[in-house]
Structures are given as C-alpha cells and as structure tokens.
Image 1: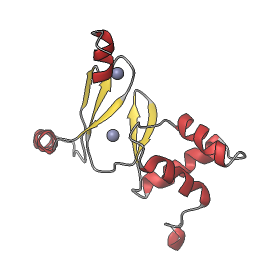
Image 2: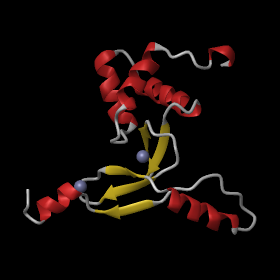
Image 3: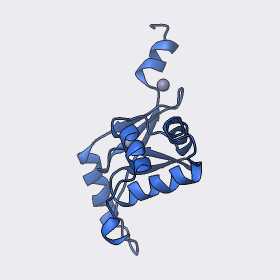
Length: 135
Ligand SMILES: [Zn+2]
Ligand SMILES: [Zn+2]
C-alpha cells in the first residue's frame, strides 16, 4: 500500500472501465467473464481482490444482494429497486428517505449507524408491459 495506493494496474483499469458506465450492478462472475476476454489468464480470485481494492479506495461500491456481492460505479448512498420478475436492480436516489432513516437511526440505543439503504421490491416497467401484454 502506502504511496502506491492509487496506482491502477492494467487489471484494475479494465475492471474500472467496465464498471464505470455500468449500472446493472454486475456480480463477481459477470465481471470475471468480461475481464477474462481481455486478460485470458486472470483468475476469479484476482478479479475479486481487484474489486475489493477499488471498493476500499472509494472508486466503486459494493452491494450485497441476498448474499451475492455486486458492484457499481455509484459511491454515494442510494436505494435500490428490485424487479421480482427479471431480477433487474435499479438505483433509486432519495435524500428525503436517507434523511428520514438517519433521523430514525439517531434514536436507536446502543448502536451507532454509519449508513443506511432501503430496498424496494416490485416489477419493472418492461416486465409489467410484458405481463399486461403491451410489449
Ligand atoms: Zn423486470
Ligand atoms: Zn446502486
């Protein structure tokens, strides 16, 4: 670590490039399949440790969805909408909700809350359209 902290290796730049404009919240496996195409000899473990590094340095963030780690370029706290039909995860920003939750958190005894996020479950526009026969 130390002064090399922010040196981006080729592997890290490839990972970062892929995730930069990707809002689908890819899993480690999805990241691995992509990176492998550019760096055929890379292992999943290496991809994973690179992702950890990027998370620790606030370049990307990690979301735990039902025990599966997913990654995204958005590092500000935000909420997520989960489509029950296709599994799509959509970012949902609401400062109002964050403020409200953090306000509630202040009232929790014997526990200090650093952050909060809320999950919403439902059906996305596309799936709803398919279900209603509109697509
Ligand atoms: Zn859907
Ligand atoms: Zn997100």
